[in-house]
Length: 339
Image (tube, rainbow, N blue to C red):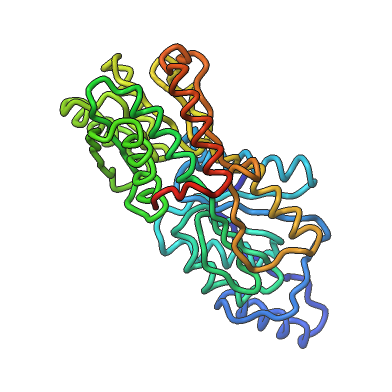
């Protein structure tokens, strides 16, 4: 794993004309000018992952890194990962990977769509895939997940489990996929208890666990006894707050977070990111990749509700039956989950 890298340089110079040609090529790469018909400098399959948060978050970014490792182990790929500290770094990192002839670059998050569209034309031999993205180009694919379906099921659990009739949602930033998930969560809860009250807060970033804990404690003080978090590393603070309160329950997101705090976690809305990333990597490897939107959900085995078996006794048989019935109508397409 590397955090930063520099563009390749050619140092072997046999003639003056070769030196001039090499220096000219370097200047083109450094300026990000269009590069046509580029061929990989090696036959090894190379895949990169760019994230906005740390891969130690036990959630969104950790799941993507597991996918990167699976691609390495299953396809023999050379891999690299970098975390962007500022939005300005996204274009730079995409260009660096393109200049190093990476076959596939994942931009892990809604924020990566526009940078991918800007950079991709300069590196037509590199495929770019943005998760939670819908914008496409000849070598740019979006990947959308039916996360709202899983969030709706989580809402059913929360609505049934809440004793106070007050539930909470805490997100990292107010991006459309998170907003949609919270609306679906609320709808699921109201299908059980039409009078349920929803509290919503956003941390403002994806890393500040202390701020997320404060948000959770504020919601708990207002009566929330079940909180659904979708805040990556920051979301770990929600588990800390629930542990401190003891009677509050948490619902995890993106990865199976049931073991983060098993004594307070009812379950997790899981995106099987390794499975999704492998689908795309195989398409690139097999030269069948196309710039389109991969729409993945329960039917693809990518999005699912995973109950915490250690708290199974807190979810009644009636709620389990309601979950099964809701899942069937969602899969059949007869229930439109609000987004």
